[in-house]
Image (cartoon, rainbow, N blue to C red):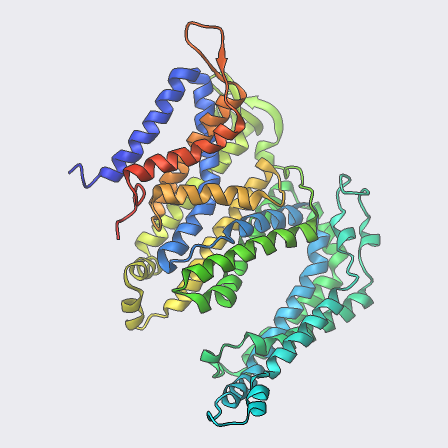
Length: 510
C-alpha cells in the first residue's frame, strides 16, 4: 500500500516540510504571503514545464528552444497589446512568404524527384558527372530565396515601428512617420511572395515527393493568405486605431490568444523543419535546439532591442489602486491587491495561480478522457504499435509539439504583467522549468505540476530569506542569505530528490 503511493507521499512530505519550516520561522503572515508567491511562480514554471514534459514523454525530445517560445510569446502579446502597428506592417510580409511557400512546395515536388533520380548514378560514372549530380538546383533556388528575403526586408523601418512608447530610445515615433508608404510595402509583398515560391522546393522532403491533394486547394489557400495580407496592409491605420480603442480587457485576451497561436505555429515549424529528421538522435536534437535558443535570443534583440520592457498593463479586474478585504469585495471593487492576514497581496498573482490550475485540469482531462489523450498516452508507451493501428503518429507528434509550445507562449504572455519582458527571460524560466520536470519525473505530466509547486515554494521562501531575513530566536539578530543561495536552493532540492528517487518523484525506472 505504501509502495503504491510512495510518490504522492514523498510530494506531501516535501511540501509539508517547506510550509512548516516557513510558518515556524516566519510567522503566519509572512509565511502565507510566501506560499502564495511560491504558487505564483509554480504556475509559471508549470506552464513552461508542462510542454517540456509532454514533448519529452511522447517523443523523447529535450527541447532547449522551449524557453525561446515562452519569451517570444511574451513579446508578441506585449506588442499586440500596446503596439498594433508592428503587426499590421509585419504580418502581411510573413503571410506572403507563407502563401508563396505553399505553392512552391507543391510545384517543387517534381523538381526534388528529378534531383533524387540524378543522384542514382552507376559506380563507374565519370567524376565530373557525379559532382554535377550533387549540385542540386533546389539549393540554388534557396540561395535566390534568401537573397530576395534580404532585399525585401532591406531598409524596413523596424526600429521606428518598435518606438511606440515614450520610453523608447530616442522617444516615441508617430505612426505616420514610422510606416512606409503603401506603394513601397506593395513592392515588398511581391518580393516576399517570389521568395516563398523559390523557398518552397527546399522544404519538400524526399520521403514525401508525391503531391498531396489537388493543386487547386493549395492555390486557394495561397490566394486567401495573399488577400488577407493585402487587406491588413490596406487597413493598417484604421486597424491600429480600432485596436487601441478597445478596452484593456479585450486587448489582454487578444494578447493571450495571439501569444498562444504564435507559440503553436512556432512549435509546428520547429518540429517539422528541425526535429522530425532527427528522431532517435538525442545528441543532435540537443545541439540543434541549443542553437535555436541562441538564435532566438539574438533575433528578439535584433527586433525589439536589448533593453527590456516594463510590465504590461493588467486587466481592469486588477487595476484599481486599493486593497479589498476579501475575494467577494474584490469582484466589485477590482482592487490591485487583496488583504491576506493583514498584508496586501497582488490580485493579478492570484489570477496567474488560477490560470495554472485551469491549464493543469484542462490538459489532464484532455489526456485522460479524450481520444487524442488516449493516443498520446498509448504513443508514450509504444508508438510503433499505435502506428500499426493506422494512426498517423507523426501528425500526433506535431500536434503535441504545437500544444506544448502554445502553453509555453501562453505562460509568457501571462508573465508579462508580472515580470515584464526582456531578452533573457526565456533562459531564466526554462532552467527552472527543467528543474521542475526533473524533480517531478521526466515525461510525467502530474510530476511536472508537483515539481513546479515544490520549486516555486522553495524559491519563494529563499527570496524571503534574502530580502527580509529570518529572526533568530532569543536574539535581536536577523539571518539573511545572499541571492546566490536563494537561486541555488532549487538545485539543492533537485539533488536531494534525485538522491532519494533517481527517476524523480513520479518518474518510472526504465
